[in-house]
Image 1: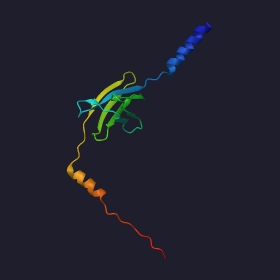
Image 2: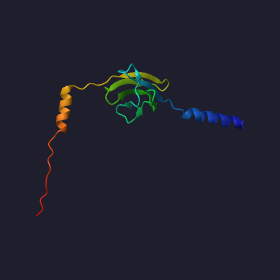
Image 3: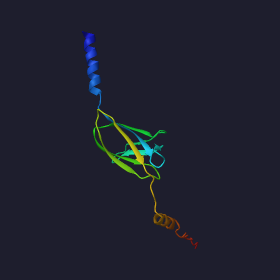
Image 4: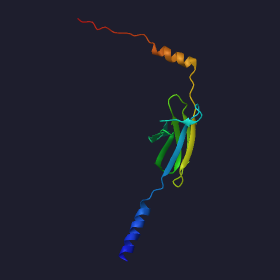
Length: 129
């Protein structure tokens, strides 16, 4: 009887401490290179400090999320940032596949960037009295 009581207490404690946390898993692909994996792309939750990076196969994993609505932000240097809204449920993982396209820069933006970097070098000389 005593061992049955301890068994019941251990099962109750295990179930009591179990958490229903959400999980987002996915793959980030390069739209420009026939959907090859985009290595070390940044995946973050908007308005939150949670971030993940893709691995060598383009896969990412964000875990321990409470159930609710989130906005995922996918970014990579030289590519357009993409935002996707998802609903996380603690019982079933969210699976995503995202393709990022290369960003474009116009010639006028390039000229304005070049002109701001060529400012006159002004030096001030201190006078000794």
